[in-house]
Length: 587
Image (tube, rainbow, N blue to C red):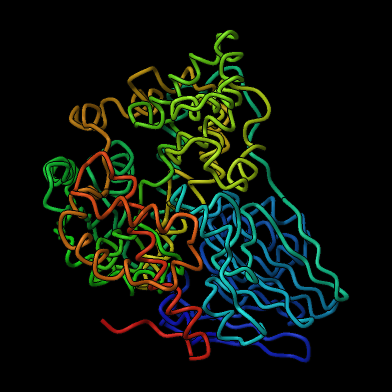
């Protein structure tokens, strides 16, 4: 199991084994580099802990626990978890602030507890088979444990990947392996497994925090995530509001200075100029990485092996690879859009506002109810106006309700309950779906592939608690998002950051399709026997669309073809060759 995920922590390997459990850790040494070996234990060896991630308030917790009589043998945040468990038991989960997936083994009670951070920054997979529980930061380590009699494709995951582009709940590509949801714990005691949530998002509030309070919270969040490291820290920088905010506060903290990294694809949307201006203003050691589609396609199998999922947006591999050559820790602007509402000009939010306006008129709602019996293509889409859930599903997939896999609306319906208008509910939904199961999952996989820990200050627990319940009317207008973030950073960031259109480290799918992507897809997809079995519903339709002359209006189908190409690679690595020790495919 440890061999399978050595890339996550090549600095040190440690194990603890007794009659009931085997714990192991591949450590990436960041806090207390010399003394923070794992598994960590308390002074009487009654509690053993393995941690992936960082506890940002570990110093404060250590001081409190020392006053209560606890004795520490290191300055490690991992050891703090063990003493916190001794003092407060399960209640200690509410006291931890950070990004983490960890296990606690109580040798006295013979009880195991697993837990994952509030937002879902760090992944945690597990399976129960033949009375055994196996868990890991990546599913491939569970496969290496060889506790599963069979390993099969999760059909729900395949459908959601093809239709949505990411998974909508805590599952994996394997039917037999689950993810522990964010803000959740799992306990195994006396052969019984129980799970539960230890934190819920803030309720709807009627006002917003003062701008000065938001600015101070931003500064504090960035500073503590920059300072909590005994090794150099770098940062991603696109020149937009989110990454520039992080760089503005982090740039003067580290004695070694701050290196920043920007990535582009040789397209008009590249952000080198914007990032360069911010880097010069804050005096960072700036680096630029230019990628072309042929590089991306050649590395696609390796990216999929690390992500364990065939996805389109794995290109952050390159900027993570570049940063890893200089540091073990890198700051990211991920989460800013979800916390500060940064999507008002995106296509799906424009559609959401249009749908929201239409649904206010009850006659149109009644008209939509008759759409089911009308034989036109538009009528099939109009059916979505019957409910917010169906409308959102159509927005994120591009398909009318009759074409959707039924697990899609089922997976998101809970997020459309409670207060808020349609757009507000979408923001809430994406915080619980797209953020943990797409953005954060990909970032963890692509960074840890290069033994790099990516931190997300804009998702710091204190900032999430402050901003998440703020009504959307204070956060965005019809054409401008992040109103509160803009106000908080006015006078700190250059005006170019506020005027810059949103793009990020993103690729133009149609541009890639006309290059290496289209070549690879047309070479491998038509002869695929795998896809006729595991993607049977969409495979013929995708083949039909991609064999027509290239057309930017068919970008949605090109993205599905990209995912199918990834499925072909994924199935070969993880299903067909499962009997072999998992290893990263050669180029």
